View 1 (cartoon, rainbow, N blue to C red):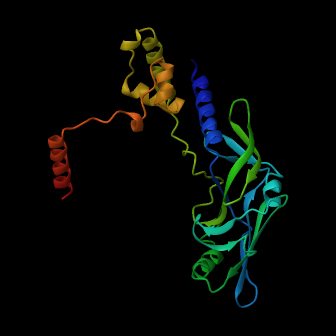
View 2: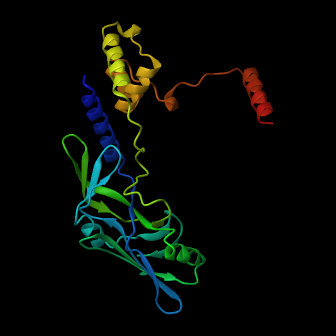
View 3: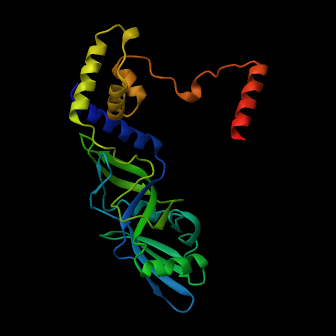
Length: 269
């Protein structure tokens, strides 16, 4: 099995995880056009873009693009979306209350919000925006429709939902895109380690099942490429490892249990 095939299988597995979870994903973009302007004595008007469309960005093991029109359906459904700081805390504004509006234009998802100038969170945020100490926006969404290239190196999102999500002003560096549901890109594994691990795997498959094993390094390399121990077990044609939560718990006698509890309590003290 070639290393490129292992890499393709890993990308397929990670794409499957994204599809099966269908939970909230997050993307972060540099907010080059974000501005905060006074509108009367009590209101500050925020303008910015929480997302761009038709612009590819790197997601680690693949490239992603949100297609133009992806927000059309969800915006027509009058979604309940909050404006937050770093995706947490009480809202600065909210679409449901009419203090924030979201629209899609040729650039992306445009945010316009009326902020209470007397809100302590707004008072703390305003000078940071003016100084560009905070210069990025992010949004939370659920994918409704997407598609992948044949080699799983490119994902196109064509429909998504913003309902019960948020758009956020974020303090992290202006990374093109981030996601809470994906691992960061792992360091590249040298080719000689991959080749050595594959040679071990090939030799192991020639042995009876009960004698098949790999060195720790080969397990690490192949497990990283395949995305987990279950896939590695399948590669060796071995039973998949039992998840920790389903392994039978060891039974202790009352006396032994009391001794263990005493030792743990003493150690913590």
